[in-house]
Image 1 (cartoon, helix red, strand yellow):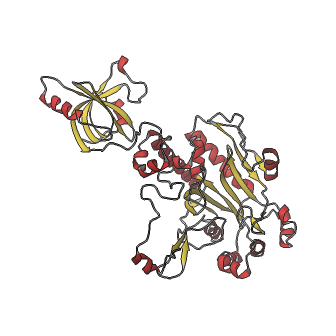
Image 2 (tube, rainbow, N blue to C red):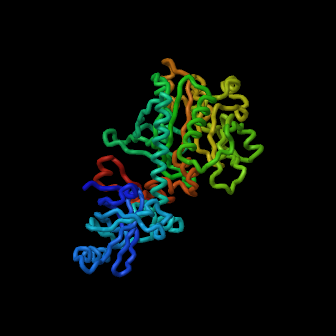
Length: 471
């Protein structure tokens, strides 16, 4: 007999079914045992009855008395309608129950280190992440992962329909200064040299524009060694990376706005948009009016279903780093200045007043996306690097490949990167990114369950030509 999923049982009244899943709860009433059986699609009540003239039923009921929460079982039984007064309106299967005929225990479970019937938010982080495979059994966590899957699929399908091409860019790449610390990976074949895990696919997607692809996207994994916080995961995160040739700022923003509206309409029907058209707010207005470049524009900040999307535009091209006594790119060094700012940029005049073609996508006070129109003139790009303090030698070493590519017919281009984790955190009303990631890192930078990083063996270090310095 083929397995039946629990969500399908209400359609099979009067039929025998084979169910497989976990014991959610067990209730012992002597001659009658009730269990709630759980699989990925829902929960259904199973009844074991002990009848004096039925030896096999008595045996099954005795077996059922041994069942405990989270045991994995398969049950063959008859789907029966419940009397109306005994229906459970809290369950989708609440109008039926399964009369058990056969029971097979597939795996037993020890007593769990915590309850999984709660939301788990009051448990300490270390315990939840050590037993993350149990934590993920919570209905809330399962829901979050399933919605995450739907959102990513929706975005992928939407962009494919818009003629974007999904391209996977390298994970082992070159260290280039993009704002955060790199994660370095030693090379065994080239001792003393290191790869870097990408902080973003920024340069590769620009090279794809030079290659003539015109419309690129990727569900990209990005790696940054920066301090964690509630809305920023440590180590790695996922983003929807988008790049377009022959585009404009407004075309990029319009694409994102339309896609976001369709996404909310399809999967978050309980939500309501504050603005039917997402406002464009200048950086200067945001700072002056809201004292932040991530304004929360909700009319009712206590309403968990209100979504106030907006775009912040016209960011400064540079910001002054007081401690380092130098100028730095406000976003990243590949952001184009506004056309009227190019002459002052090349003359290195009024650097603090220059405006850029950078834009951020903001939701309820969280930056969920960032992007820009890119620099495509090698001379302008070189000047930006010089203003940031890079020598000509360092520019050639770190970015020569990109500047060389721009000499062979580069189209104007721009794009945006949307943080999947942060978008989901806000849409699902979660307080922390960890609630929408299957295996997040702890705030101290350890991976869930496996507790990386760990020490490398002396043999591994020797093979890589690495010595660990001790104080």
